[in-house]
Amino acid sequence: MKDLPDSQDIATLMDEIGRRARAASAELAFAAPEAKRRALEVAAAEVRVREGEIIAANEKDMAFGRDKGLSAAMMDRLMLDAGRIEGIARGLEAVAAQDDPVGAVMTEWDMPSGLHIQRVRTPLGVIGVIYESRPNVTADAGALCLKSGNAVILRGGSESFHSSAVLAECLKAGLRAAELPEDAVQLIPTRDRAAVRHLLTMTAYVDVIVPRGGKGLVGLVQREARVPVFAHLEGICHVYVDAGADAEKALKVVLNAKTRRTGICGSAECLLIHRDVLDTIGQGVVRALIDAGVEVRGDAELQAIEGVVAATEADYGREFLDMIIASRVVDDIDAAIAHIRQYGSNHTDSILTEDDAAAQRFFQRLDSAILMRNASTQFADGGEFGMGAEIGIATGKMHARGPVGAEQLTSFKYQVTGDGTVRP
Image (cartoon, rainbow, N blue to C red; front, side):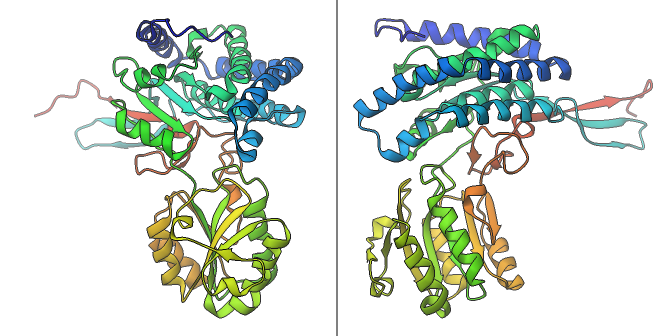
């Protein structure tokens, strides 16, 4: 794909993409489950066949990222190798194998009037997905929208321009093989940011916008969108080590939550430690993080541990996406909850405890999209939730919260059946 020149009429381009997406969505809405499954299976095979082409395209993107001065974490998000490409193919196959949500009866009942009423899942229509850096989102978002009967307009980050283009072509190859409309998956063919702003106002064509990226991107979308938004806000994820924590579990979970992959939204960004275990489990966990190469920015009490540096107020509530974690000692579970309410982003928060009452209190009193007990925040992922893939982690309070999979990309309609039934 070649980037369009600045002189390109963005409004005309985007309106044409929207018109074609709307037409494709009308056809895809009633496509047979078998056709959608075949499209995704062929797309997965195409990804494997074109591995070399994808890697070559990704090398161009990596060079662009280096020239742009991207951080190591962002470069890690951008990079594709054979293992990650195989992961993309398997993700497509996992979505293909899922039950088709379209037409599923959510509930049904009979009325004394003689009416039989069904609430049935139906596609949203056209979904605009705006994302940064990670080219695998092209495949994940395209697959989930296709599975749920929605057309999708994809706008990847400027860094992933070439990788995303090849992955989009793989999805289109699957659509052709299944005799489904190719316009069901469209990648905006320009880096021009004016295309994003136009997409946000295309109420005639687009039903939902899903932004997947940093605070700057999501903030722009929330400010300027006239189309409804499934907000994927930054992942300010907390791990709270409770007084009832198990030492071995705490060590394993905290290290994994921070260091497995620092550049993903499920990476832990703040560690809270109950005062009663500061000198035991807390000391061990903090030292293990430092030994692993993590910069621990702590409060005054934690600075007594060799290697901990002073935290500023700005460090709490910050998404580092790097080998850095903020940390604080709390007096009790309620202080931990208060901290998370103040500084969290309603993404994912985890409590480490063997105390059932403490875990229940944590779950009841916090309203994050994902709450965990004795588990790493890195599990905040649609694939790990059995969804095959995700289009993002929704942190708002619309009907889609947490990992947004195919089922969350549907709405519903009522199908009402009578037998010459009239209302008195």
